[in-house]
Image 1 (cartoon, rainbow, N blue to C red):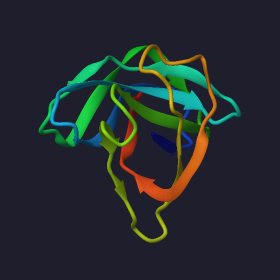
Image 2 (cartoon, helix red, strand yellow):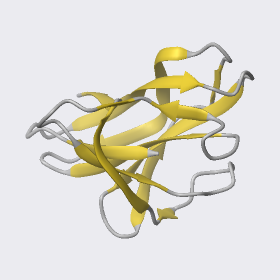
Image 3 (cartoon, rainbow, N blue to C red):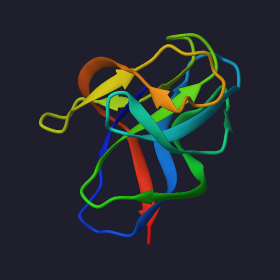
Length: 138
C-alpha cells in the first residue's frame, strides 16, 4: 500500500529514507521494503530502500534507508509505498488516520514479493491519511 507525497518548493533535495507507521498482524517476523515512484500512470520507479525485518510485535514507526542517490524535484508529487511479504490482510500494514481535511487517496497492487517493478499500476483505495513519509536533505 502507498500514498502520495508532495515535495516542497526547494530544489536540489535528495531522498534519504522513508518512514512509515507499521503494524505486523501475522505473529511472525516479515521482510519489508519501501520505494518511491513518480505519480504518472503507470508509476515509474525512482528509488527504493533496504529490506528490513518487521518483527511480530511491531506496532510503530520504522525507517527504511534509501539505496543510492534519489534526487527529488521541487513541487513534484511522488507515490511512496511499503511492500511486505505475506498475503493480503495477513501481513504488515501501514497505519492510516482519518483526520478531517488531511486525507489522500491510497493505492495498492497485489504483486508477488520480489524486486520492485520498474513500472507500477495501482488500484485506487480509500481516501484516508497514510502514515508514510519521505525524509530528504540537500
